[in-house]
Each structure stands twice: as C-alpha cells, then as structure tokens.
Amino acid sequence: MFKSVVVAFTCLSTMACLAQNPEPTVGFKKGDYALSGSVNFFSSNTENSFFDEELEGSDTKNNQYSFNPAAHHFITDHIVLGIEGMLGESSQEWNERRESTNDFWQIGTFGSYYFTPQKKFSFLATLGVNYGGNEYSSTFLDEDGMVLYNNRGDSESISVSLSAGLNYFISSHFALRARLGGLSYSTTTSDNYYTNQDNETTKSEEKSNRFNFNTGLDHISVGLLYRI
Image 1 (cartoon, one colour):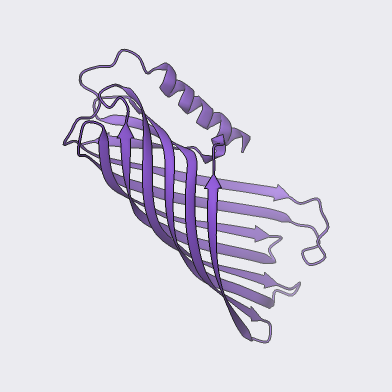
Image 2: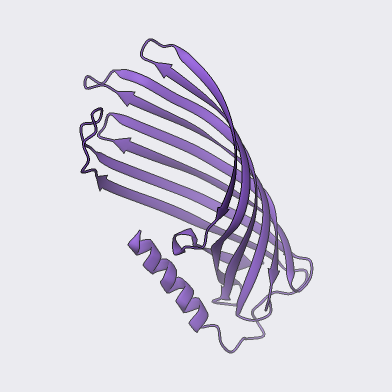
C-alpha cells in the first residue's frame, strides 16, 4: 500500500510541476476524439498472527487486476461525452484451505468538463453513470481436502459518481490521466447460494444502497490517453 501511495504521489507531482508553457500542438478542441485506458494490478501476501480455530493461523494471498478502457468525444472545447468499461478478476487464498474468486465487469457513460483544454495541463470534473455486475465463489476445505461448504452468487448494480481528475500531455497525441476519488452512490441486488457438505443448498437475496466519499491517495488511478 505504501508503494502505491508513493507512485501515485510521484505521478501527480510530476504532472503538476511540468504543467508550464503550453504548446499550440497539444490540448483538445471541439470535434476531437480520444481513447484512454488503464491497467491495475494488486498482489499481496499477509502473515496472520491471530489464531483462527478453523484455519489454525494462516497466510492470506490476494491478487486483483482490472482493465478500464474509454472513448471520448469533445462536443465543445470544454465538454466531452464518452463511454467506458471495466473488466477484472480478484482472488484470495487462506492457508490452502479456503479460496475465493470474483469476476466483475462494468459499462457506462460519462460527461467531463475540462477547465483548460488547450493547455498541456488541465483539471477536469467527471459525472458518470455505470451498470455492472460480478460473479463470485468461495470454497472451504477440511484438513483432508474435502469440501466443507461452498458459497457462490452474483450481483448487479447501478451507480452514479462525481470525481475530479488531471490531464497532462506528454506529446501532441499522448497524455497522462489521473482520476481522483470523489462522491458515488450505488444500489446493488444480489443472489447468494450456500451449499454445505451434504450438498444442501440455501438461497438468499439481498439489496443494498451505498453512499461513498473517497478522497485518499489509494483511490487514485493513473492511465494513458491517445488523442486521435
């Protein structure tokens, strides 16, 4: 986590410090199109010091990756409309006796306002609406490797978000982008299935509403943009 914070802070500092003397060959104008994307990867291995009666103390392994593409079209010099998506997977493992996987996706539309679009460096504000879902499964094994129980399920969600961002051109066509945390509201419905060692399955349904306000450096994502 500390390394991620340092990398994010370094990227933002570099973008801000180099944002001087704008060139006429960079920036955006009405009618421009652009493509952007980011690839995120996270991996950790944590030694648990607490005693767990079921896991008997264990190491926890976490892996997660996601790909986030987007397409942009400037309808004015300052306003851009676009579509974006996300595809990813995460996995966790505890002491080789319990493991879980989660496949998730998202697609949506957004509108952004660039404060200084014809300069190398610009702040922007983005309002987005997204629809997404995920499928997960979790399996718990006993000491002999037999399945004690299995959890699986899927969910769908609709979210609205308002976030801030930065854009810095490193050439006439390529720019670095950083999206900061912000406000978001989401509503999620899910179906969950629990299967015990006797192969008996119980189903439950859930619905939740969540409001988030994220401003920490761990919610910053950095990507690359190409102006067509």
